[in-house]
Length: 222
Image 1 (cartoon, rainbow, N blue to C red):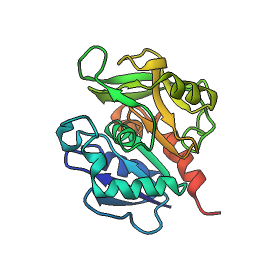
Image 2: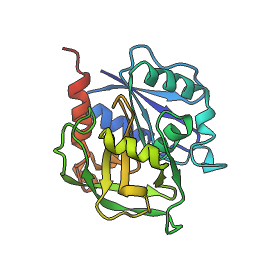
Image 3: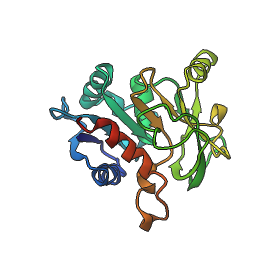
Image 4: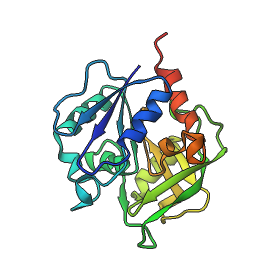
């Protein structure tokens, strides 16, 4: 199993994500944003959290124009797996790989704490390690995590069971308490909370481990 973690100027969770993948059994390549292609044989792409390009213009907007994002979009279009976490979620919406947008938190303040997440669906490679309805504790650290989408998009997400996680106590004003969503083929996940920061008991919790183990189970060669 091979994972690629994209690195932008300002990424600060790239190594955390790489370690979480490695602990689940993946071989990980770090890929610089100016590269025009992904390593051969990559099974999943991770777009990490941080402050790509200082969050100038809009969070993720400049990163979305990096050469590597064309390769990530092509990978997703071919049915490849990808996960975008926090700033990575913002990048995936800015590229159009996922619908909607992430706006400034409703309280206009940066929030850094552990929150409760409800697993909204177990029907995906990312969430099948949980049961729908489970509540897990995952850290957040963001200033622009307020998910918004038009009514038609929200209806599609709900009708197609593509809401992956919701907040138990909405910290940022996201519509429908949405914390994470899936692409229409269910192979791309964008989420604001950081499962890679809940993958080591020494960091205070391991509720994110099941996500990475579930991916490994799906992507392990038969």
